[in-house]
Amino acid sequence: MHQAPPHGNAKTRYDILINAGDAASATGPAFQFRDENTLNDLHWVGPVPDTIGVGTNLDITAEVDRYEDRSCLLLLEPVATAVR
Image 1: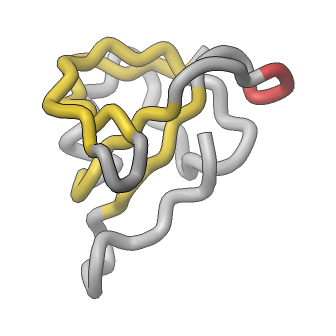
Image 2 (image 1 turned 45 degrees about the vertical axis):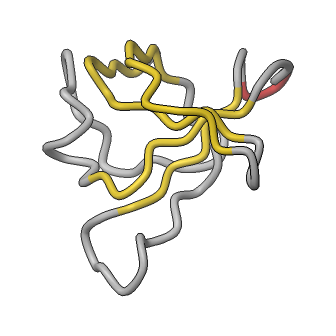
């Protein structure tokens, strides 16, 4: 997972890029949560981390919203998120 940039001019909404696998050995497709609040929208199971950034390993359950051709990203809608 990469450090989440703010979504547009928002101060509490983020676009979160997610890589498959562990942070140390990420292989596979790229995913993104877009325009999400990290406290409320990720549907945390268990403790909520203070920050999410590069190297944060998470277990994510999500629905695929769509594939975006221009960015080659699978855009996801979060169902449940937990810290690993």
